[in-house]
Image (cartoon, rainbow, N blue to C red; front, side, top):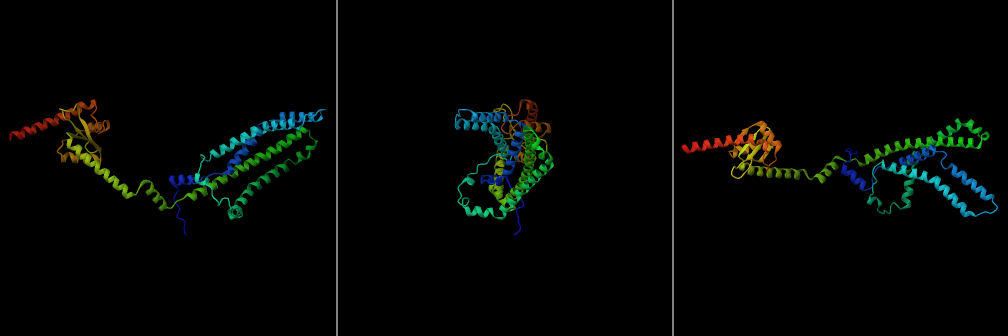
Length: 355
């Protein structure tokens, strides 16, 4: 059966995956970065704690040769103190690096469903089957690859320094320790570099597997769209009801309009002005493009005068909202139009009365 999961995961799909504990995490990246931090922290201060250890061994030997031995408790206390003072900073660096390596992969996720008890996870038979399954064998073989590279680099480094190692017995104690430290650091930083490169490759492979596991079919995307945004038919009906409601409100507003100022095609602003009750004209409707055409159509139906004045129409459209009075700076221009309309209406009434 062909795989029809060709669509990328939607944000909602990714959120659900995180809620179920399905997140992209690489333990190898955390381990590699921790190893890098510890190696270079120790390499930056190779004498770190050396004076304390020298003093510790000196005091230990002196207490062993003293006439009166104080017992093992002071010795254990001194050993623990020196070990904590030496290993404490190293462990702190390892902890900080591990936390940073976890955070760069994304914010922590607490999936309640993933933490819920599952008897299948505690079944030893299932764990043994997973260990000897194809996926388990594949993981074991993959782990052998960086190990092989590290062994090769370590042997190569030892062979290159074989002459110095052979003559190490003739060196002083300090020089011999320096040689051993140099060899250990060389192997350590090469090991860290291999782990970093391998963890980056492993993270890329896990990312591809993770993205493929989240892919969706086109039908799933459509179903999710219906669930999140509603049925398209329902949305169309809601838009139609809103449009009808707006048109009914517009019809009522246009019945009160005194004049309509147009662009003439792009903008239309309907004004109402009753000198006996209003201090200034009020915008009762405004629109652009299709809505402007609708306003002009209703104005003709209600016999509201339409005046073409592009600058004034644009200024009214941008400066006012429906239900607001016009700004004072437009009083003069609007008053001129209204005065012209009122005079024309008075002449028409006088002509009708003369008949």
